[in-house]
Amino acid sequence: MLLVLAEEHKEHLGFLTRVDAAGKLNVNTETVQNGVEGLMYLMTESSKMMISEVDFQDSVLVLGFSEDLNKLLLQLYLDNRREIRQILSELAPDLPHYHNLEWRLDVQLASRALKQQIKPLLTLKLHLEQNGRRNASVFQTDPATLLHLIRKLEQALSEMKTNHCRRIVRNIK
Image (cartoon, rainbow, N blue to C red; front, side, top):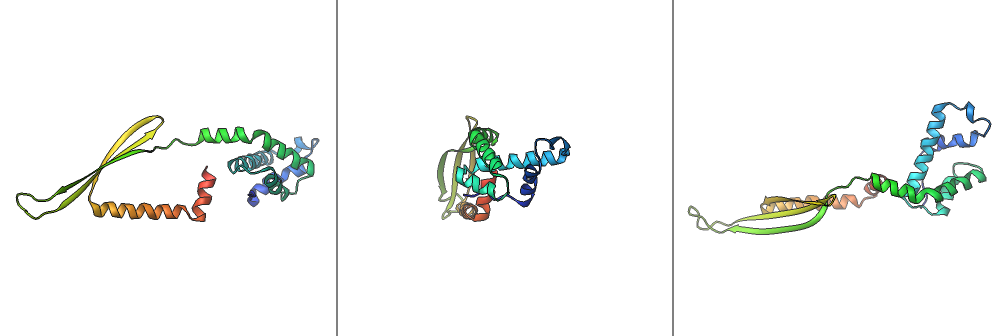
């Protein structure tokens, strides 16, 4: 998988080809900051996607760097990709996740006023876990509302399978 850089990132990384050891002191701070941010983006995105050596070289090749600079960037990537992934995983938020679900179906068949009444009620107890702590939430609903909720969740799940959402989720991770 190749890493596709935006034109802005290519421009920021382009200063590396124009700067040599003697001219580094004559570069303004904004150019240096943009170059460092470009390098950070290149390294973090490559580490997120676990790009192979060949794919990394192909991704950097389009930037027009010298062969020595390409090898230096590849070595920098190979030396630091595990550490970058570890730091990124530590920065990721710990969201609550599913642990268990208990449910009960109650049906009221009749009452004093109505002898032929059928009133179903579904009670759900959702157990979530976050940071090693568990908490439970209790919900009560009728079957029609539950079916509506199921349809909406299935619609959201199918939306997550689109290419657009996959790209967004991949960039978040």
